[in-house]
Length: 104
Image (cartoon, rainbow, N blue to C red; front, side):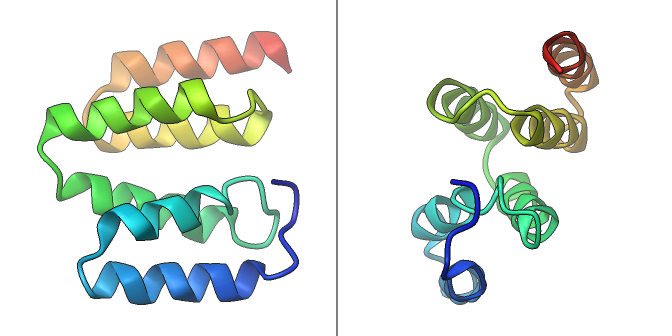
């Protein structure tokens, strides 16, 4: 998860899949980049953009699943804080942010 050798390729493949409407596959690729220093901002923004097109309950379920599956690193907490706030779930975003601050 630290820095995939093919990070740039993964990002642009995710982008192409997103444009084709293959959101599930695009999300999986973007997830791999959430811990990559060079692409984490773009990947996070792309995930949020996709989630904004989902029904809210599906988007929130995805974020909860992401929290359960991915390593509890600073980048994950930062992304989740931003994602919850982008989905108008500011209270949950603040909770995640506070949890991250306690850990790091």
